[in-house]
Length: 163
Image (cartoon, rainbow, N blue to C red; front, side, top):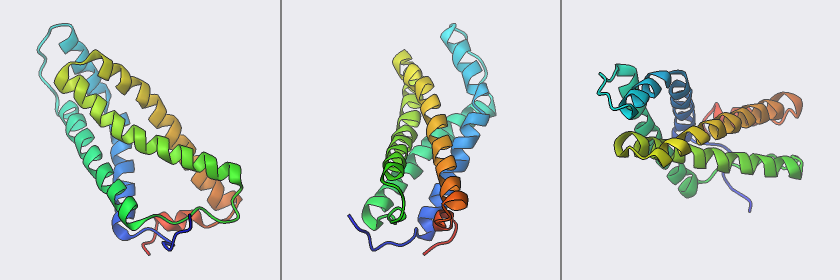
């Protein structure tokens, strides 16, 4: 399906980079919540440090922003992949994007289930999807850099400058 959208708008670009920053923060600052969660599972009632509270709050914020981003994508659209791109690369890009979107929804939802609901299954899903997010983000970054610097399609400028 061809698109008339040639680039992302300012809101889509800002949401992309804010969500990316939130995901990085969640990985960098996750140890505090892991420690608290383990103490709670041992029956203790630890003080909850600011970093653990931030992890919970920012996970919820990530979910809200991801919903907004998907709504914008569905209503406004997104630019097509470069026409000259290899069909196999287009499939990898689509699967990577779908996986990343799914993971960005599943991570906060499973985190909430584990934190607020004490659901061990949710904690397991959260731990598994941590790896899924890492792999998906890695593929996303490598793919974007490959497009920009090897294939020279100018793909990165779509997420740097609003249409």
